[in-house]
Length: 305
Image (tube, rainbow, N blue to C red):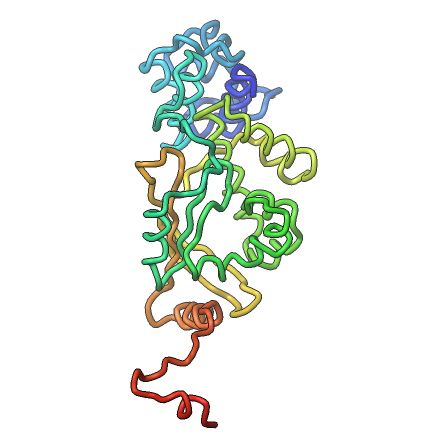
């Protein structure tokens, strides 16, 4: 990914969404550009027009924190967008990843055994580990049942790691699994955009973006919008093929021992229909248990109908 192009597109799309009225500027005469002009952004940020024009051409290397903060205020960036701007600036300066060190192990490496134990200890919610490429690296038992449409027999047969972005944009089943498909698509791309800003040299992410851009017009359009977002917390709706509609609260937790990996936990409100359906899913997912015999039961007794 070309850092200068990323900076140029990010800044131009941010100023295009702000109207002069939003920042208290007059709107006299006809306007050839959507949103703010370069000169207006420069004025709001307290920069010269020439310097802002250089920044918007992608020449952001060496920009100070005060300049970046002024840009963030002028363009009304939220916290995620502000962090993305800093990531782009650091990448231009050759400094990788503002918020975490680069992974030294392959992104698809199997999670540690202790992490798998921790996942399985979560029995009343869906828990899974995801990497920056949207790969579903590990799940608890309930998570495997919940994500059965994503994991699928074909993925297992090919030995391919299930990928949430490929499922979202390339598998028609995602339209049924995600009732709010458009919102999920925007979230997925926004998270990937933020990851690309953190490490623009991530070849695996570049390949995934190239694949999805080639095969999905929707992905291509959303990627071009340069919107970024973090996951964090919130609620989501799903339509599971076995138990029906599920509404979950979710929490995303960083795994400090594995930079770049996150643990997500989906839980249902106690006493809600979703909680009952989640219990049904857990029963459906539970392996069949052989009858437990009493140690005093004789062989003849155990075989008696």
